[in-house]
Amino acid sequence: MAGPTVGVLPPLGRIVGRRRPRRLKVTGVAQGYLFVAPALAYLALTALYPLASVVVMSFQDVAEGRWRFAGTGQYLRALGDGLMWNSVRNTAIFTVSSTVLHLTVGFALALALNQTWFSRTLRNFVRGALILPWVFSTAASALMWALLYHPFGLFNYLWVGVLGRPAVIQFLGDPATALAAIIAVNTWKSYPFYMVSLLGGLQGIPLELYDAAKVDGAGGWQRLRFVTLPQLRRVLVAISTIDVITSFGHVDLISMLTRGGPGVSTETVAYHVYKTALLDGNLPYGSAVSTLMLVILTAFTVVYLRVVTGRQKESW
Image 1 (spheres, helix red, strand yellow):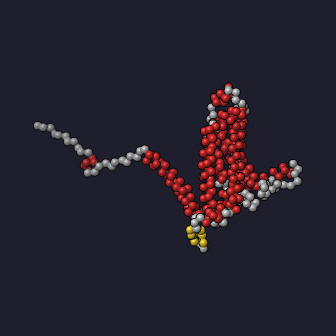
Image 2 (cartoon, rainbow, N blue to C red):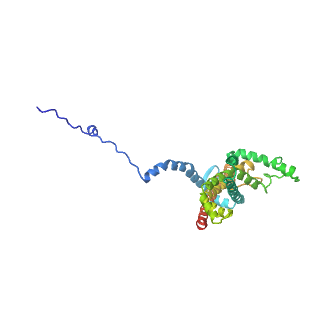
Image 3 (cartoon, one colour):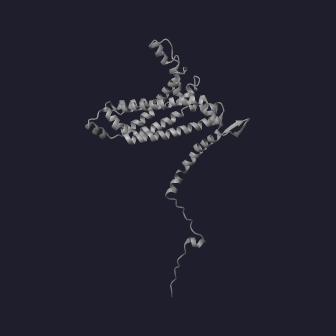
């Protein structure tokens, strides 16, 4: 008598009459695009769309409450506006002065803090104290310096009461000193960022390079020029580029301390756009000035980076 036979069951997918779903495999470049897609979408929403809106608005005009195409009229008006060119001049002075002072003060303090001849406790305390201006909010910094610049403030007390000068200095009320006073505040507020960045770069330089330079007879200035600066070139290029861009668009300290005054002596391009577009409500003209300045800043940044990197390859 034959025993019972054991049959082999067909696959489950064949019993129910359908196949298992196939997984979509994404590899290579497509996978990378999927990872950066959220960031690209955020960038398009918060940067590209507003930028495109500003460019489109710069070719418009408002007449009797209606928007109409005006061609290049707003740009021609901006190029012939003396106030706009005055703001360009103030912006150039503010940007160049701030960048030079930020790098000079930050680099000098970074070199001092990188020395090891004084105790670690004192060095850490000084580092923390020098970073404090960066911690303060812009509003608090502006209020503090406005009190220092006041005719009855500390600076004028030292100027008149201690040095015996006959008259107070209107730091923020005199067109000859107002822009320099704001540059000083901006330098005090921003130098810690550059100090910390350069200090990190200094601490990453191998000590063997300095030892080899000493063996070759290099002095302090030669070690600074041929060892320190070449090793910091990437940091210097990065932070100087950031500084130019941020100083070019600086608004907050000017708005809080002088509001572009006295007259228009401290009115930069960024504040001119802010006042024209938002305070005066002339959005098309403000958009045209913004677009012009964006083109100028982009061209300057590209040329600056090419010149700096080219000189680095030749000399460093």
